[in-house]
Length: 372
Image (cartoon, rainbow, N blue to C red; front, top):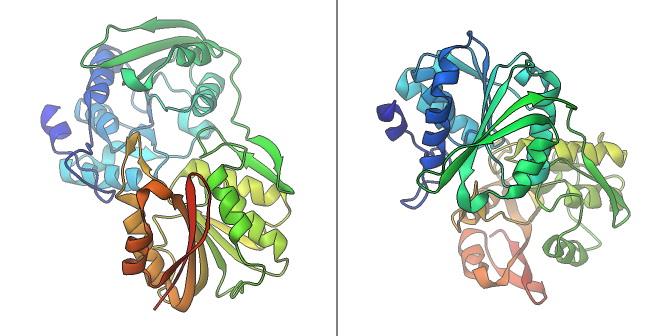
């Protein structure tokens, strides 16, 4: 197994020496579950939250077949596929959304603990509702990202919770005796005249973060674009509030919203449906804007992420800026909000074109960049 894990890559996600594809928590989950996995039938093992395939491929290499796996990030799913092909394990698993079919009848669930308690609650609820009554959830993470509140959330859905010894700054929780399960339901809120919906783990949840608020306050009243062939674009859309704001304030406009996260996409689709604009807003899971043709957009709005999994990184925004430049037509505009300490203006100038500051508060800056 060690050879398989050591050969894992993050590609096509960003790669850097400080960003790893497998860590001590993955190895501990696999070790703590080894005996349990040895005694279950084909198709009885489920993996949730596997960043780049360590848990799925570790279990497959040990002999498990018919593994069902769920990864929230699109690039994580693609990295799993690439890693599986290199290891000759592509036939050992299939990916599914976080729905009942993912966990129905499961006996063992390998879970990489999410940082969001609401996301953990959604995951635990669907497992408890649809897995086999004898299911054992082997949930692990790095100690710096774990809290006692995670035990409490698991306790809402499982009658027994055991805790492993810590190893290499990681720990595993083993949950048994499922009860009171239910399928995920989005949180809801009324924000800026909009109905906002957010599944657990969506950025900012069912609220408007201060950076996005500044961006909305700065967007011009008159916009170029908004046709079916030139939609207004909400890139890295999160819960979809920017796209919904554009669609409701411009009743004839078509909007395209995309995000790499399945949680974000599900949240944004729920937001559009709640506001009755789902017929004019296409929401799609995508890596940046790879599904959009070059030189095809007049306006893109972006609040760029700075997390890759649990890691904070400044490598995500340059990729988004570069793809924005590809998709914008000459004279098209990128409206972007960013943490002022990141100093993105020079990068935007190089990647997109002339960039002007539009607004600034104590923490965030809004700029508009015009494609050359």
